[in-house]
Image 1 (cartoon, rainbow, N blue to C red):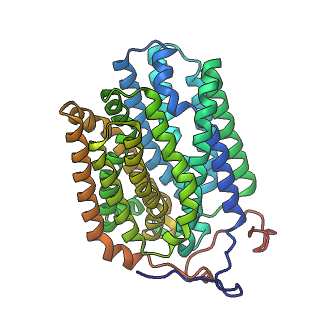
Image 2: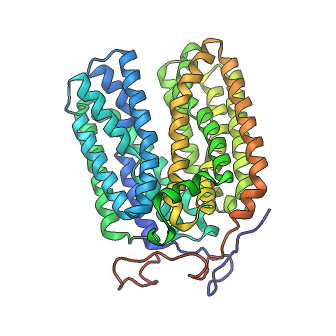
Image 3: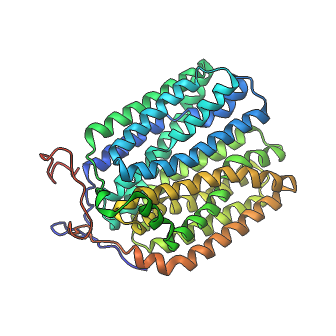
Length: 429
């Protein structure tokens, strides 16, 4: 285990360091945006209940959305490295808001499929740019804390959004689309006005085609991405097969809602308490332990039969989720060179989107064979993922050693504020 440097020169040991003001803008915008995240979780209900699609056709439309989301991450990473973080972020948010408004009004099946695909392609355009901004702004020793704070804000906002989303849906589903689009617009304008461009110019690094090949030749990154694909396929069972398994045990939908609410409450309460502790440990080992906890949580689900025992299993894998979410992005940002961070983070995000698409395809047939078969298989896959991550640990550790928070600009290219009058004091909260 290595210890991250504990203090910046000029700071007393143990005194909490401030994060740059642009980071807090991103944090605040993430909270606002997630407070308005209402279309995605209610999309299936909207397609069936409002547009009158059958469950099978709605499933096809949702698969189209999933494919769009996979493209979204890769495209967003490419654009973040070429157009710039801020331009990609703003464009992605505004385009996603427009796609949502259109989806709320189209009625013909062909138009619904087309706009759903557009919704998927734009849903995560901003994400690689946002994660790259965090990596550009924050030295590696503090990235676990920074990504953990973003994860916490997203979950807090989403938990509140679910309460208000259900209320708005009863008043009319179109309110969901307008509320979500409004939050996207606010976030886009906030970043455009208050966050400087942080990208290192790509021109000096050769052609874009060669740059993408550089990412694909990174064996450590490819191995890490494949392992995270397996992790995502297991984790996404919580949103695909878990409610079906609980229904098969005779539990009402409210029981699943309580279990997932417990997931959000655990994240909001626990993550701030352990964020710094996770940051002081070897990130590669943190993610191994996180996957072990996720595997253990889904394995013990095979023993659950009541709402309380399901909540116990959810608590175990939620602890693993917190660990993986805190260090996953930090590891990828550490593996990437500054001018390729968008592409690296886009590939990382595409693994999550692919896992979400594969989860129901693999999980539902296993559930048909019996819930224990499904959950024990999830545990076995998580074990393989953990062993894979463990094998990658030496290489990841070698390439992601933290910089001192007081790092020199020659160690890592600094961000360049759009307004030259913005000094270091103005960028620190």
